[in-house]
Image 1 (cartoon, rainbow, N blue to C red):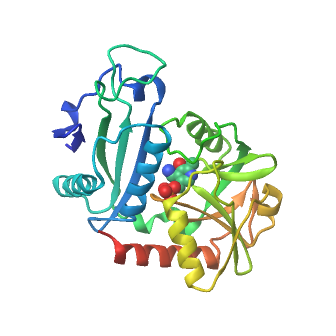
Image 2: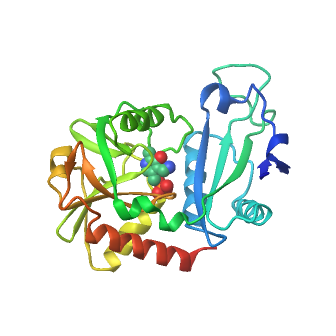
Length: 286
Ligand code: PMP
């Protein structure tokens, strides 16, 4: 049985409790982070911790922990759960006031709720999907306008994954005003020759921690990076495509809306970036 963390306590998962009045439960009034663990060490921890502070700040939500404590809690959960490869999920909500009310509660009387738990994924870095590549479909992006904040409001991304599944694909890329924003739970890229193209940062997409690292490694490896929007039609004609996220690293995309890219197998640039990202992240892991 897993040991999880709830509001200062390490507990068996079956004993952990959150109130039914919690605003995360009632209103999706909460933020989250997912940090990967490889070889018992945290990948890109600092980036996730910084983005968490930013998400909290943008929503005027008090932080129940300081960043130093956060690292200790992550490490403690890795140790207590003997976690080798997998993820740590963290969620902070605006707490549980005495009643349901749209107005934010006073943080002095309603402390934030913090929950962390581990998910074990043995062999996370050698996923069979990465060798085959994944298929995506395109769907309309109907999410709200602050996608740069990592909120737990994940209903539409879940529906998008179900639409993909129904269509025989693995995931969906969302399109707004004719241009791809991002994947349901990842950032989206196309490759033309040696050039990597991905949408520029704005409130329209989540500022992926993996995205930042991958673009840095790509530039260091003398690959060209172009941060601009692209359409599904342009993507279908690309040489390669891929996605990035904390839990999939760099994952090649081999088909978009039924159209195979290049030879229909993971491309050279995507595979190389995956290798570099995993190698470098393992070296820098804490
Ligand atoms: N975009 C969305 C919508 C996401 O949900 C995620 C992952 N949570 C990402 C991008 C990738 O972000 P990261 O690399 O920080 O996991």
